Amino acid sequence: MNAYLPRAAVALAASAMAVSLTSCISTQDSGVRAGDDITVGLLLPENQAARYEKFDKPVIEDKIRQLTNGKGKVLYANAKQDATLQTQQVETMITDKADVLIVDAVDSKAIAESVKKAKDAGIPVVAFDRLAEGPIDAYTSFDNEEVGHVQGKALLQALGSNAKSGEIVMMNGAITDPNAAQFKKGAHAELNGKVNIGKEYDTKEWKPENANANMEAAISALGKDKIIGVYSANDGMAGGIIAALKAGGVSPLPPVTGQDAELAAVQRIVAGEQFMSVYKPYAPEANAAAEMAILLARGMSLNSMAQADVDSPTNKGIPSVLVPVISLTEDNIKETVIADGVYTVAEICTPKYKAACENLGLK
Image (cartoon, rainbow, N blue to C red; front, side, top):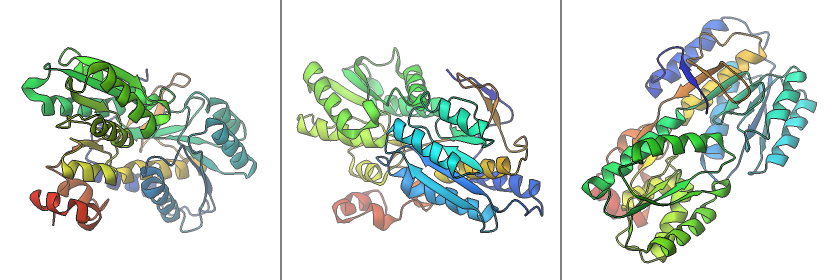
Protein backbone atom coordinates (compact mmCIF):
# COMPACT_ATOMS: atom_id res chain seq x y z
CA MET A 1 0.00 0.00 0.00
CA ASN A 2 1.21 3.47 -0.81
CA ALA A 3 2.68 5.55 1.99
CA TYR A 4 1.59 9.16 2.27
CA LEU A 5 4.12 11.38 4.00
CA PRO A 6 2.83 14.92 4.58
CA ARG A 7 5.20 17.58 3.33
CA ALA A 8 2.74 20.36 4.14
CA ALA A 9 -0.92 20.54 5.12
CA VAL A 10 -2.69 18.51 2.44
CA ALA A 11 -6.32 19.09 3.33
CA LEU A 12 -6.66 22.49 1.65
CA ALA A 13 -9.96 23.84 0.46
CA ALA A 14 -10.29 23.05 -3.23
CA SER A 15 -10.81 26.64 -4.26
CA ALA A 16 -7.80 27.84 -2.30
CA MET A 17 -5.75 25.04 -3.83
CA ALA A 18 -6.62 26.13 -7.36
CA VAL A 19 -5.33 29.62 -6.60
CA SER A 20 -2.18 28.43 -4.86
CA LEU A 21 -1.21 26.00 -7.63
CA THR A 22 -1.55 28.66 -10.29
CA SER A 23 0.57 31.07 -8.28
CA CYS A 24 3.27 28.40 -7.88
CA ILE A 25 3.87 28.02 -11.57
CA SER A 26 3.46 31.67 -12.46
CA THR A 27 6.01 32.64 -9.80
CA GLN A 28 8.56 30.07 -10.93
CA ASP A 29 7.95 30.90 -14.58
CA SER A 30 8.21 34.67 -14.03
CA GLY A 31 8.86 36.00 -17.50
CA VAL A 32 10.33 32.76 -18.86
CA ARG A 33 8.62 32.14 -22.18
CA ALA A 34 11.39 30.37 -24.08
CA GLY A 35 9.76 27.05 -23.22
CA ASP A 36 6.27 27.76 -24.54
CA ASP A 37 6.50 25.42 -27.52
CA ILE A 38 5.71 22.32 -25.45
CA THR A 39 3.96 19.13 -26.56
CA VAL A 40 2.09 17.33 -23.79
CA GLY A 41 0.91 13.77 -24.25
CA LEU A 42 -2.37 13.20 -22.37
CA LEU A 43 -3.37 9.54 -21.93
CA LEU A 44 -6.70 8.85 -20.23
CA PRO A 45 -7.89 5.34 -19.33
CA GLU A 46 -11.49 4.98 -20.42
CA ASN A 47 -14.68 6.66 -21.54
CA GLN A 48 -17.20 4.76 -19.38
CA ALA A 49 -17.06 7.41 -16.64
CA ALA A 50 -18.21 10.80 -17.90
CA ARG A 51 -15.52 12.72 -16.04
CA TYR A 52 -12.57 12.04 -18.37
CA GLU A 53 -13.99 13.50 -21.57
CA LYS A 54 -16.33 16.05 -19.99
CA PHE A 55 -14.05 17.51 -17.31
CA ASP A 56 -10.44 16.32 -17.18
CA LYS A 57 -9.50 16.62 -20.85
CA PRO A 58 -10.83 20.15 -21.47
CA VAL A 59 -9.51 21.49 -18.15
CA ILE A 60 -6.01 20.14 -18.83
CA GLU A 61 -6.04 21.45 -22.39
CA ASP A 62 -7.17 24.91 -21.26
CA LYS A 63 -4.57 25.10 -18.50
CA ILE A 64 -1.76 24.08 -20.84
CA ARG A 65 -2.82 26.80 -23.29
CA GLN A 66 -2.75 29.35 -20.46
CA LEU A 67 0.66 28.26 -19.21
CA THR A 68 2.29 28.26 -22.65
CA ASN A 69 0.92 31.52 -24.01
CA GLY A 70 -1.27 29.55 -26.39
CA LYS A 71 1.71 27.79 -27.98
CA GLY A 72 1.53 24.45 -26.17
CA LYS A 73 0.04 21.42 -27.90
CA VAL A 74 -1.80 18.42 -26.43
CA LEU A 75 -1.63 14.97 -28.02
CA TYR A 76 -4.67 13.09 -26.70
CA ALA A 77 -5.40 9.37 -26.48
CA ASN A 78 -8.09 7.41 -24.64
CA ALA A 79 -7.33 3.73 -24.01
CA LYS A 80 -11.00 2.67 -23.65
CA GLN A 81 -10.07 0.41 -20.71
CA ASP A 82 -7.49 -1.49 -22.78
CA ALA A 83 -4.05 -1.67 -21.13
CA THR A 84 -2.40 -3.04 -24.27
CA LEU A 85 -3.80 -0.18 -26.33
CA GLN A 86 -2.52 2.31 -23.78
CA THR A 87 0.98 0.82 -24.04
CA GLN A 88 0.85 1.38 -27.79
CA GLN A 89 -0.40 4.94 -27.25
CA VAL A 90 2.54 5.74 -24.97
CA GLU A 91 5.00 4.37 -27.53
CA THR A 92 3.37 6.48 -30.26
CA MET A 93 3.79 9.61 -28.14
CA ILE A 94 7.43 8.76 -27.49
CA THR A 95 7.90 8.38 -31.25
CA ASP A 96 6.09 11.69 -31.79
CA LYS A 97 8.59 13.31 -29.39
CA ALA A 98 6.19 14.57 -26.72
CA ASP A 99 8.02 16.73 -24.19
CA VAL A 100 6.11 15.34 -21.20
CA LEU A 101 3.35 12.78 -20.56
CA ILE A 102 0.30 12.90 -18.29
CA VAL A 103 -0.82 9.29 -17.79
CA ASP A 104 -3.95 7.96 -16.10
CA ALA A 105 -3.14 4.25 -16.23
CA VAL A 106 -5.65 1.57 -17.16
CA ASP A 107 -3.46 -0.90 -15.24
CA SER A 108 -0.97 0.60 -12.83
CA LYS A 109 1.42 -2.36 -13.04
CA ALA A 110 1.20 -2.97 -16.78
CA ILE A 111 2.10 0.64 -17.55
CA ALA A 112 5.45 0.49 -15.68
CA GLU A 113 7.55 -0.61 -18.67
CA SER A 114 6.05 2.13 -20.82
CA VAL A 115 6.87 4.71 -18.15
CA LYS A 116 10.48 3.45 -18.16
CA LYS A 117 10.66 3.76 -21.95
CA ALA A 118 9.47 7.36 -21.71
CA LYS A 119 12.07 8.12 -19.05
CA ASP A 120 14.80 6.49 -21.14
CA ALA A 121 13.76 8.81 -23.97
CA GLY A 122 14.10 11.80 -21.64
CA ILE A 123 10.35 12.35 -21.32
CA PRO A 124 9.11 13.03 -17.76
CA VAL A 125 5.83 11.41 -16.69
CA VAL A 126 3.06 12.74 -14.45
CA ALA A 127 0.79 10.05 -12.98
CA PHE A 128 -2.73 11.48 -13.06
CA ASP A 129 -5.53 10.25 -10.78
CA ARG A 130 -4.07 6.72 -10.48
CA LEU A 131 -0.61 6.02 -9.10
CA ALA A 132 1.20 4.31 -11.97
CA GLU A 133 4.22 2.14 -11.25
CA GLY A 134 7.59 2.76 -12.82
CA PRO A 135 9.85 5.85 -12.58
CA ILE A 136 7.18 8.54 -12.60
CA ASP A 137 8.18 12.11 -11.78
CA ALA A 138 5.01 13.48 -10.19
CA TYR A 139 1.54 12.43 -9.08
CA THR A 140 -1.76 14.17 -8.54
CA SER A 141 -4.99 12.61 -7.34
CA PHE A 142 -7.54 12.79 -4.60
CA ASP A 143 -6.95 11.41 -1.12
CA ASN A 144 -8.24 8.00 -2.11
CA GLU A 145 -8.44 6.36 1.31
CA GLU A 146 -10.39 9.40 2.47
CA VAL A 147 -12.85 8.77 -0.38
CA GLY A 148 -13.55 5.34 1.13
CA HIS A 149 -13.86 6.82 4.61
CA VAL A 150 -16.36 9.41 3.32
CA GLN A 151 -18.41 6.71 1.58
CA GLY A 152 -18.38 4.41 4.60
CA LYS A 153 -19.37 7.17 7.01
CA ALA A 154 -22.23 8.22 4.72
CA LEU A 155 -23.57 4.67 4.51
CA LEU A 156 -23.47 4.36 8.29
CA GLN A 157 -25.26 7.68 8.59
CA ALA A 158 -27.99 6.48 6.23
CA LEU A 159 -28.41 3.18 8.10
CA GLY A 160 -28.45 4.77 11.55
CA SER A 161 -29.66 2.45 14.30
CA ASN A 162 -30.52 -0.23 11.70
CA ALA A 163 -26.87 -0.80 10.74
CA LYS A 164 -26.89 -4.42 11.91
CA SER A 165 -30.50 -5.27 11.09
CA GLY A 166 -29.57 -6.98 7.82
CA GLU A 167 -26.76 -7.37 5.30
CA ILE A 168 -24.87 -4.88 3.18
CA VAL A 169 -23.24 -5.59 -0.17
CA MET A 170 -19.84 -4.12 -1.03
CA MET A 171 -19.21 -3.41 -4.71
CA ASN A 172 -15.56 -2.42 -5.02
CA GLY A 173 -13.75 -1.26 -8.15
CA ALA A 174 -11.38 -3.08 -10.48
CA ILE A 175 -8.36 -4.86 -8.99
CA THR A 176 -6.19 -3.39 -11.78
CA ASP A 177 -6.82 0.13 -10.40
CA PRO A 178 -4.70 0.95 -7.32
CA ASN A 179 -7.25 3.59 -6.31
CA ALA A 180 -9.87 0.85 -5.89
CA ALA A 181 -7.78 -0.82 -3.18
CA GLN A 182 -7.51 2.48 -1.33
CA PHE A 183 -11.24 3.20 -1.59
CA LYS A 184 -11.88 -0.29 -0.24
CA LYS A 185 -9.42 0.13 2.62
CA GLY A 186 -11.00 3.41 3.73
CA ALA A 187 -14.53 2.01 3.50
CA HIS A 188 -13.65 -1.13 5.46
CA ALA A 189 -12.05 1.01 8.18
CA GLU A 190 -15.42 2.66 8.70
CA LEU A 191 -17.72 -0.33 8.17
CA ASN A 192 -15.95 -3.31 9.75
CA GLY A 193 -17.67 -4.37 12.96
CA LYS A 194 -20.50 -1.88 12.48
CA VAL A 195 -22.39 -3.69 9.70
CA ASN A 196 -22.81 -7.23 8.45
CA ILE A 197 -21.14 -7.58 5.04
CA GLY A 198 -23.16 -10.26 3.28
CA LYS A 199 -21.40 -10.17 -0.10
CA GLU A 200 -18.38 -8.35 -1.47
CA TYR A 201 -17.16 -8.08 -5.06
CA ASP A 202 -14.21 -6.61 -6.96
CA THR A 203 -15.90 -5.41 -10.13
CA LYS A 204 -14.10 -6.18 -13.38
CA GLU A 205 -13.19 -3.03 -15.31
CA TRP A 206 -15.53 -0.89 -13.15
CA LYS A 207 -18.28 -1.69 -15.67
CA PRO A 208 -21.89 -0.96 -14.64
CA GLU A 209 -23.06 -4.15 -16.34
CA ASN A 210 -20.64 -6.21 -14.23
CA ALA A 211 -21.85 -4.48 -11.07
CA ASN A 212 -25.41 -5.20 -12.19
CA ALA A 213 -24.63 -8.91 -12.58
CA ASN A 214 -22.86 -9.02 -9.22
CA MET A 215 -25.83 -7.33 -7.55
CA GLU A 216 -28.23 -9.83 -9.10
CA ALA A 217 -26.08 -12.63 -7.65
CA ALA A 218 -26.08 -10.95 -4.22
CA ILE A 219 -29.87 -10.60 -4.22
CA SER A 220 -30.20 -14.26 -5.13
CA ALA A 221 -27.75 -15.34 -2.41
CA LEU A 222 -28.92 -13.08 0.42
CA GLY A 223 -32.61 -12.56 -0.35
CA LYS A 224 -34.16 -9.27 -1.37
CA ASP A 225 -35.51 -8.56 2.12
CA LYS A 226 -32.12 -8.93 3.82
CA ILE A 227 -30.18 -6.22 1.95
CA ILE A 228 -30.20 -2.94 3.88
CA GLY A 229 -27.43 -1.03 2.10
CA VAL A 230 -24.92 -1.13 -0.74
CA TYR A 231 -21.42 0.27 -0.78
CA SER A 232 -20.73 1.16 -4.41
CA ALA A 233 -17.28 2.53 -5.16
CA ASN A 234 -18.47 4.78 -7.99
CA ASP A 235 -21.55 6.20 -9.69
CA GLY A 236 -21.43 4.15 -12.86
CA MET A 237 -21.62 0.94 -10.84
CA ALA A 238 -24.30 2.49 -8.61
CA GLY A 239 -26.49 2.87 -11.68
CA GLY A 240 -26.11 -0.83 -12.50
CA ILE A 241 -26.69 -1.78 -8.86
CA ILE A 242 -29.87 0.29 -8.54
CA ALA A 243 -31.22 -1.21 -11.78
CA ALA A 244 -30.62 -4.69 -10.35
CA LEU A 245 -32.28 -3.77 -7.05
CA LYS A 246 -35.36 -2.51 -8.88
CA ALA A 247 -35.51 -5.54 -11.16
CA GLY A 248 -35.12 -7.82 -8.14
CA GLY A 249 -38.10 -6.26 -6.38
CA VAL A 250 -36.07 -4.71 -3.54
CA SER A 251 -38.37 -2.05 -2.09
CA PRO A 252 -37.86 0.43 -0.66
CA LEU A 253 -34.44 0.91 -2.22
CA PRO A 254 -31.66 0.68 0.36
CA PRO A 255 -29.07 3.48 0.58
CA VAL A 256 -26.43 3.20 -2.15
CA THR A 257 -23.15 5.13 -2.21
CA GLY A 258 -21.20 6.36 -5.22
CA GLN A 259 -18.34 8.53 -6.42
CA ASP A 260 -17.66 11.08 -9.18
CA ALA A 261 -20.86 13.17 -8.97
CA GLU A 262 -21.92 12.10 -12.46
CA LEU A 263 -25.02 13.85 -13.75
CA ALA A 264 -27.10 10.65 -13.71
CA ALA A 265 -26.02 10.05 -10.10
CA VAL A 266 -26.94 13.59 -9.04
CA GLN A 267 -30.35 13.02 -10.60
CA ARG A 268 -30.69 9.71 -8.75
CA ILE A 269 -29.81 11.52 -5.52
CA VAL A 270 -32.50 14.13 -6.26
CA ALA A 271 -34.99 11.31 -6.92
CA GLY A 272 -34.07 9.50 -3.68
CA GLU A 273 -32.69 6.43 -5.47
CA GLN A 274 -29.00 6.94 -4.58
CA PHE A 275 -28.04 8.20 -1.14
CA MET A 276 -24.76 9.94 -1.91
CA SER A 277 -21.81 10.40 -4.21
CA VAL A 278 -18.29 11.68 -3.60
CA TYR A 279 -17.79 15.02 -5.29
CA LYS A 280 -14.21 15.35 -6.44
CA PRO A 281 -13.50 18.87 -7.70
CA TYR A 282 -11.85 17.96 -10.99
CA ALA A 283 -10.44 21.38 -11.83
CA PRO A 284 -7.80 21.47 -9.05
CA GLU A 285 -6.63 17.94 -9.88
CA ALA A 286 -6.51 18.53 -13.63
CA ASN A 287 -4.87 21.93 -13.20
CA ALA A 288 -2.22 20.39 -10.94
CA ALA A 289 -1.44 17.74 -13.57
CA ALA A 290 -1.06 20.39 -16.28
CA GLU A 291 1.10 22.63 -14.10
CA MET A 292 3.38 19.78 -13.03
CA ALA A 293 3.74 18.72 -16.66
CA ILE A 294 4.77 22.18 -17.81
CA LEU A 295 7.26 22.61 -14.96
CA LEU A 296 8.82 19.24 -15.73
CA ALA A 297 8.97 19.96 -19.46
CA ARG A 298 10.87 23.15 -18.63
CA GLY A 299 13.23 21.29 -16.31
CA MET A 300 11.96 23.16 -13.24
CA SER A 301 11.52 22.00 -9.65
CA LEU A 302 8.20 20.83 -8.18
CA ASN A 303 9.24 21.56 -4.59
CA SER A 304 7.13 24.68 -4.11
CA MET A 305 4.07 23.02 -5.61
CA ALA A 306 4.09 19.49 -4.18
CA GLN A 307 2.27 19.04 -0.88
CA ALA A 308 3.11 15.42 -0.13
CA ASP A 309 5.58 12.64 -0.88
CA VAL A 310 3.89 9.45 -2.08
CA ASP A 311 5.45 5.99 -2.39
CA SER A 312 4.42 3.55 -5.13
CA PRO A 313 5.48 -0.12 -5.11
CA THR A 314 8.37 0.82 -7.43
CA ASN A 315 9.20 4.43 -6.59
CA LYS A 316 9.68 6.39 -3.36
CA GLY A 317 9.12 10.03 -2.47
CA ILE A 318 7.09 11.05 -5.53
CA PRO A 319 6.23 14.80 -5.41
CA SER A 320 2.44 14.89 -5.20
CA VAL A 321 -0.65 17.05 -4.92
CA LEU A 322 -3.65 15.44 -3.18
CA VAL A 323 -7.01 17.16 -3.51
CA PRO A 324 -9.68 16.86 -0.76
CA VAL A 325 -13.14 15.43 -1.50
CA ILE A 326 -16.71 16.26 -0.45
CA SER A 327 -19.67 14.02 0.45
CA LEU A 328 -22.48 14.95 -1.94
CA THR A 329 -26.06 14.37 -0.77
CA GLU A 330 -29.40 15.96 -1.51
CA ASP A 331 -28.57 18.56 1.14
CA ASN A 332 -25.60 20.20 -0.60
CA ILE A 333 -26.17 19.87 -4.35
CA LYS A 334 -26.67 23.63 -4.68
CA GLU A 335 -23.48 24.46 -2.73
CA THR A 336 -21.28 22.02 -4.63
CA VAL A 337 -21.84 20.93 -8.23
CA ILE A 338 -24.16 23.83 -9.05
CA ALA A 339 -22.09 26.53 -7.31
CA ASP A 340 -18.92 25.20 -8.96
CA GLY A 341 -20.52 25.29 -12.42
CA VAL A 342 -20.28 21.54 -12.97
CA TYR A 343 -24.00 21.35 -13.77
CA THR A 344 -26.79 23.87 -14.10
CA VAL A 345 -30.16 23.46 -12.41
CA ALA A 346 -31.65 22.99 -15.89
CA GLU A 347 -29.29 20.10 -16.63
CA ILE A 348 -30.19 18.34 -13.38
CA CYS A 349 -33.86 19.20 -13.20
CA THR A 350 -35.18 17.80 -16.47
CA PRO A 351 -38.95 17.21 -16.62
CA LYS A 352 -38.53 13.75 -15.07
CA TYR A 353 -36.92 15.28 -11.97
CA LYS A 354 -38.72 18.62 -11.82
CA ALA A 355 -41.00 17.79 -8.87
CA ALA A 356 -38.18 16.19 -6.87
CA CYS A 357 -35.99 19.23 -7.57
CA GLU A 358 -38.67 21.59 -6.36
CA ASN A 359 -38.96 19.61 -3.13
CA LEU A 360 -35.24 20.20 -2.57
CA GLY A 361 -35.45 23.88 -3.46
CA LEU A 362 -33.57 23.48 -6.75
CA LYS A 363 -35.17 25.99 -9.10
